[in-house]
Image (tube, rainbow, N blue to C red; front, top):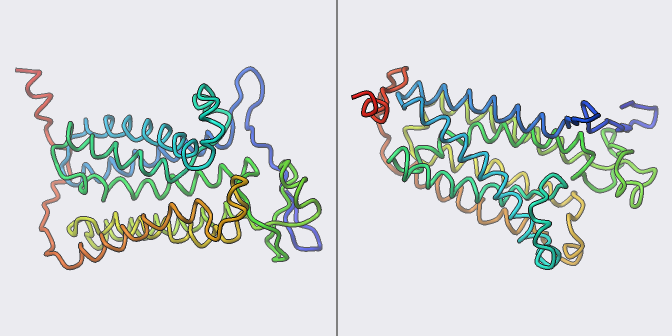
Amino acid sequence: MGLDTLCYVVWNANPNIIEGPITIRWYGLMFALGFMIGYSIVGRMFKHEGAPERWLGILLLWVIGATIIGARLGHVFFYEWSYYSQHPIEILKVWEGGLASHGGTIGIVLAVILFSIFTTKRSPMWTFDRLVIAIALVGGMIRLGNLMNSEIYGTATTLPWGFMFLRSREWHENYEGLACHPTQIYEALCYFILFGILMWMYWKKNAEELPGLIFGVFFIGIFLPRFLIEFIKNDQVAFEADMTLNMGQLLSIPFIIAGIVMVVRALIRPRLHLKFPNRFADDPHEAKKTK
């Protein structure tokens, strides 16, 4: 990467960290690091509130599976159903790319509901208000992975921070010699700021005592920036060219509305008064096994 006198960034980053019999990509590393750090953050919250430590591993499995399956199926159904309906075996080839964040969100929502039914026996909102704090961080790291892949960038720009994505075939075909908006960075910054806000709400303002408030702010903070940034982002698929609002924007609207509803609902309800034992609870499940 270099910055020349015309004030644009020449982006030529190798998407692979290690190449050979085993290839490690920056995208995969960012994805994995995000989940590892997120696991630690949620673990601190569970311990703070006296939830069983066993719940952490179960929740991690649910979320990883739901993220990958949901994001893949979201891309299949929302963006390229005409292709995958004719080549269903291709749906399994996740390693070739094609993940949609809206599908991943839907997958996680369903996973948390099932996790709440079978594991916590609590309202799903309890899990959502803690889990989404980590998800905001993961979202930002995944966007940095997109940057390393030279993918999901924006239209041409003359702004001094425009990027020339030399490793992108689409850039050479459509923007050769022009700098483009690094929309991956725009989104990553929004998500990292959101992560900071949610952490502040939880640890400094005890916003978890207003069920749904953190979850609602998360939906607004993730999908409103996504909706706005889509105006300068390239179309993901050809059929979006004739749309006033693209697929990403249309899919974001319900989440923004849901977020507003949750925030308003949380603010008009009385605050809970939670106890914070600052230790993991004794797991009744484990106690039964030792009898």
